[in-house]
Length: 299
Ligand code: SAH
Image (cartoon, rainbow, N blue to C red; front, side, top):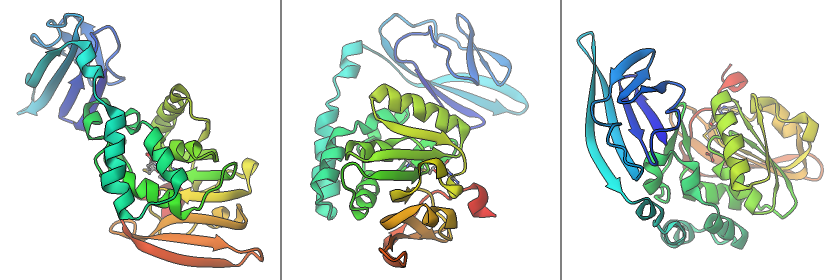
């Protein structure tokens, strides 16, 4: 079961297997045919009463109009046998993604390709947009954040020149997809996420999917000193400067990658290599657009 809050007025609810679960922290089932949203009770017409035990997809809209909160059921109400929902061939979609969007754009590293072929991206995106999981585009993951497009994940992973067993720190866990790709490549992966809700959800998701990633909630600006130094650091949020503590936590011979530039508009994919003397070498690889790194980085 999944719900998405697009704006304060619009809620989309998808029910996949009945009504027994709590809808979310904001939407609660009040009783048969009723829900509570932002503390107010709504009749849900026949939306919830048509649940038959079969898998069900329901989109529900709540509108605020002239001081009245009006509830209207709309869009599709599809009663589908549960197994037809399960029948999507995600593996084929992943192969297609690799063949169409990843390899033709210069990703050749076998470890990256293997990881991208394995990691079930659809498990990292909200239920209602799962079918878009293998499109080469970023997707919303809640809290105004996005999961990066598959190509960018592959590209950053390739630029890092990761080797099995390396210790990697990611700043900006988000959905956990990039972290899962790094873990699937054999990296000893640590990841930090500033938003408590995302951090809580991603810990559960990664554990459920069996990825060994240590996730900590907090501002990644200061890195993760207890596990430093790192062979590789990947920042998956835009910054207008490289956080000094992260450079300090990079091993000699290590690499750090981040979208560096104007956090409101566009950034350049920037790779910083720390040589054996501790000298930094910077290379830029092309324009990108990421959500901004928040917290101390913005001060
Ligand atoms: N790598 C993610 C997508 C990153 S979106 C994925 O694969 O899904 C950027 C993420 O960085 C967001 O989740 C945002 O909350 C987080 N973030 C922003 N500033 C941060 C900071 N200072 N420390 C840690 N995480 C931060």
